[in-house]
Length: 333
Image 1 (cartoon, rainbow, N blue to C red):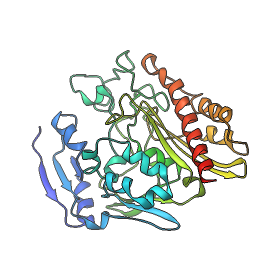
Image 2: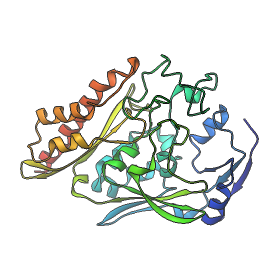
Image 3: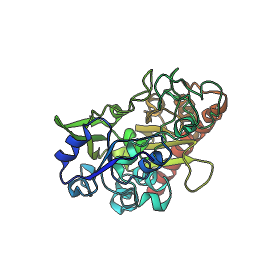
Image 4: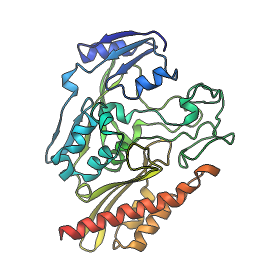
């Protein structure tokens, strides 16, 4: 591991100013950062530890919104009864992620900013990775192992998949992130936080140097009450999604008034399937309609040979999540 300096920040402005220096990174839970440093993928000159900034910890659920401090732990928030009641999809996306040990250490802020699990990014033995070494090429596009790669939102430079679960529930329900940087504070729609790879896959978010996520805010909408997060993966515990879906439905009698669908495990960034949502609105929520929404969600997919299975799997996951929500609505009635 490369040598680095370590500083524990005593204030948010100090942390932000320090992190603005080239070669400096913020660390909190460190569940991904430390791994990447050990294997030589990331080699910062300095780390700024923000775990002592109590103002970034904690969360609250009100009648209007859910507000999560960036240092809130995944396990704590996912198990909170108020979060479960307000939006089951948010809770389920957290407790279906990682292992219990990791969920009790990892922070929400770090979770939404986690790096891809692409094997060519994480293994420095591979020379071709535009995300790790810009301009070096993409081994996946050259015919390598592609079973876990993106089929939506990729580019001719990168097809790495965004690996998170929580992000899908956030983008489905119009979350925003609050940040603090050297230039002050700002609020960023979650849908605008992550960048498509295009020809600069090494730039993954719109965050400026020194800009720190301080909180995540999710406005309460009716579709959140009838929501779920369904995740298909190789094994039940501690596996990233092959395909997943965060779904929320608001009914008007027997017809769908509002539908929210976001896809995980299949795209280069958190992915909102708006055409699939629109296909449901104003219609009864039947199995046929759910399967059609699943089909529409993947009609623009561009898989490689190894990732083509995700089209059928992802469509089934979307349909399954919608039917699960319908079942829950029926149970309430």
